[in-house]
Length: 296
Image (cartoon, rainbow, N blue to C red; front, side):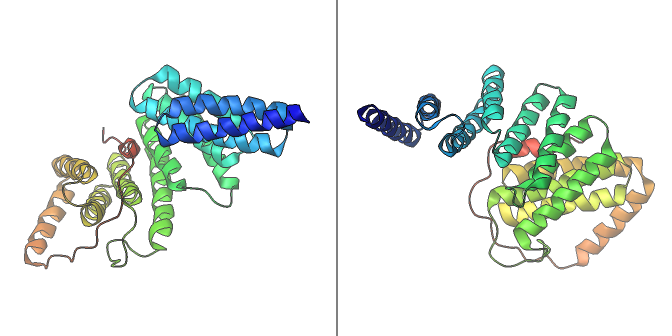
């Protein structure tokens, strides 16, 4: 009995230390502390206990968080070590396993291993398809779009970007057109992903020589970004520059697109300026730009 009480007290102290380390921003030390607590839980409650699997979920989340931080720093060895730990820890946590597979896909894409990246995205999509609720399901489709585009599979990439757009419109506006909606604006990180979805559709339509549709999609992406993020936001600038480059390339390649663009520009000079919407709240997550498909 005394031994049990001592172990529970030790576990409580470890948990308190973990909380303090996280509050201080010492996440790697917090992870090491969590792992010690997990070992102690396995010994005290049993390896297959609910207490242990709940702890596995929390430790897996920390592994994923740290992995994406180290990916930004290009410490690829640490990224892979953390994500392989997360893969083991999320054995009974399907949402966490899907996040881990998404992050592994990002890792392999950064390494230039596009087929491996796509395999992990397909695994993530399969898991998400079985879940009733998924956080940010559109992001997996946009990751798949970007990888498929790099592999030259543009029709499949287009389908994934269109799936992402539908999911985002449902998530953010309940089916209302974001260019017409005047209600309380959504969070900045999600509106940035919506703008990227429009952009990626434009990229794939351009590859598939659907030039008029492509220019329309590019334009919608910029309009959403300008309305909700502002004209000087980094995502807005990136998408605007890409749209300008796309317009020049399409006009040079397609006489019909050139004629249509001239007509639209003439109409625009006589038209009224659209009313602006409210700015999105919050900040855009680091790494959001990784969802953008390259034009070429």
